[in-house]
Every structure is written in C-alpha cells, then in structure tokens.
Length: 264
Ligand SMILES: N[C@@H]1[C@@H](O)[C@H](O)[C@@H](COP(=O)(O)O)O[C@@H]1O
Image 1: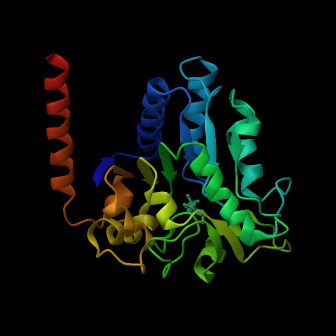
Image 2: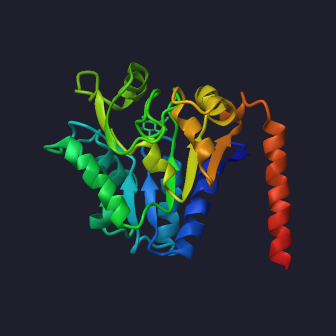
C-alpha cells in the first residue's frame, strides 16, 4: 500500500487526476473503474478541465462504475448513472455506449451481476479503479462482513450507509436499501487501485484500512492485499494514523528515487 498524505481535498483531487492523466497518456484505450459519492467530484472536475484543454482524451476509454442503487433507473436523479452523467460523462469526449454502471432497474438483478462481471472481463479488465471509502470502511457498496473475494452481486446496505447517504435524498423520497456492487474480489482484480479520502469523518475508516488487521469487518482493509494500491488522503483523514511520519518519509524517498531514475 502506498499512503500519500496531502494538505487538503484540493491537493488530493489534483494528485488523483494526475494518476488518471498519466494512465490515459500511456494507454488511450484504458479501462477505468469509476466511483460516486462526494469525494471524487473535485477529481472529475479536474479531469473535465484537462479534457476540455485537450490534455487528455476519453475517446477510446471504456468505464465501469462500482455500484448502483437497486430499484432506481438511470434517469432517477439519485441514481449513480445520473450522477456520472452530471458530474463527468456529459462534459468529456467519452462515447456513452462505452460507459457502464450496474443496472439498478435490471429485471433479473442476479443475472445482471454475472453479465456485468463478463463485460469487465471482455473489456480486458480494469486498468485503474477509483475508490472512495464509507465511514464504516465500505468500498463500493461492500459493507462490513462482505466476502473478501466476493464478485459483483446484490448487497443490502447498512443503516449507517443509508443514514450517510440520506443527505442526497429529499425527505419524502424513496431511498433504496439494496444495491448492485462490484465485489471486493472484482475490485482487487484491477491492475491499479486509487482510493481517495478526505476529512476528519473518514479518519477512523482510514486507520482501520491502513493499520488495522485484514478483516471483512473493514472491507477496505482488503486493499492491503493489492499489489498496486495508492491511498491518497488529506491531513484530516490521516489524523488517526500512527505512522504518519513514516508514510511521508517513504514518499520523500520514492521521489528521490524517481528523480534519480529520470536523470539516468
Ligand atoms: N457507494 C458509495 C461509495 O462508493 C463511496 O465511497 C461512499 C463514500 O461517499 P463520500 O465520498 O460521499 O463520503 O459513498 C457511497 O456509499
């Protein structure tokens, strides 16, 4: 796990955008795994800016989102498909037919999960998967107790997650309690994983993910098993980590190594 601690949310977004920029410059037809929630919004704005400045192109990109509410179709303002259109897809040169979000309106959600997995596989697998983290350590909608090798499936949301996400729904609006989410095993199959977390309310989840045991009680701790997981957090989200100075020291040493390699 690479732990990158930055000053604030703006620096986290810029760092995340740099990872995607590097990826797109290296491989124009990248397969990107995308996430919803409030955390990635600033990163998406940065990517939109860079796309509109012709620095990066999404023309050949295929995307797969992590999750969707079961029971909402893509035209529902609280659906994650709608969110992705508003926050990213409508503003970049991506071919909409190459964007995938689990179908919240699937007639048969069980077979839809298998089809989603098959589509990821036939696209060649995910090159870079973006993640946020829930306060209870969930990634995607893999709630605590999720199998660490799970695949895309229907998941029941915890009360904590429903309460956290209630801010996006109107008081009298129906809020789903079920979701379709990539599994932890699906996420771990991505070649690279980038998790962003900002703010003090994520500090407990971050410490459990980075310094806690590998456990289904904190689904994000499964990233300890990934060979290329980058955890990008601000000072507030990092505030409960025991080894902050060590993580910063590693980053300095990594930079020195990169500078040396560039000078060869
Ligand atoms: N399913 C999403 C997760 O993918 C996201 O990481 C989490 C945190 O969201 P936020 O970034 O708004 O804190 O919210 C939702 O539950």
